[in-house]
Amino acid sequence: MGAVPPSEFLVRDVTDPDELSLCVKLYEDVFRLGPGDGSLNTRLLVGIVRNSGIVVGAFEGSEMIGFALSFLAFDREQQLMYQYSQLAVVVETAQGRGVGRQLKEAQRIAARLMGVSTMRWSFDPFRVRNAHFNLNVLGASAFKVERDLYGTHTHGFDVPDSTDRLIVQWDLTRGSDGPTSREDSRNLVLPAVWSPQPDDAERQQREEILQKFDALFADGFVAVGCERESDERAVYSFQKTATL
Image (cartoon, rainbow, N blue to C red; front, top):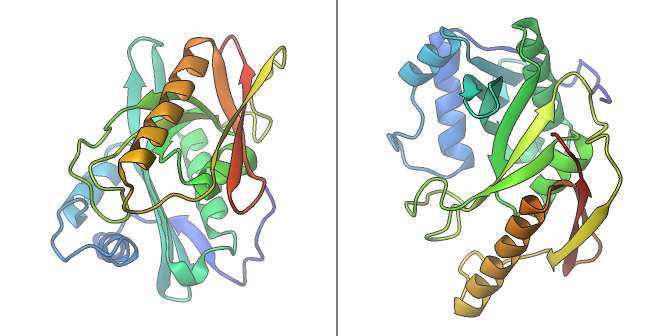
């Protein structure tokens, strides 16, 4: 990964309760939540970092400009231990400077130091900028749709009554190469921009796209890229792979 000059900002572990409280404040500010929203709190973060979780923060001087958190998880079906990355947050004024990329790299290093080689997280499939970062930049692969992952009680920037997410897996030992099998490929075209208040027609369009994701995943494909081809059009690319 291309490193950002260290003079611009510093990314490091965050374990002190006072600094963990900065994560809570930053989360509320970036997602425009009211104080005491309850989605994140200092006690929860202390519990995470004291029990095999990871919290990393990006600092510009004494100011926190971003953070990411993950916790240890276990896939019973695959008998796989992994870190699940629940949040990665960067202030608007620092976006586009590589902060998010450096936070993910810090998560990767911390996970590898504890002997974990896989990370998973979720993202909104209709936010194509995030999709491009997760799939093209980091080299993660989306392998499953989770319908209403957080129920219908949305907050922040979520589309009302919809928390459909893609689940991605990142091989922390391989870097940005993506799946090794290239025996077959598919594409899925979708609008690059969506309304924050979708009407019935747009909701139906979103549902049809999610069904196409489901079908591709059921056929053994994983999403490995997302490119915005124009102001109106984006394309997900898929590859067939026997294993993630």
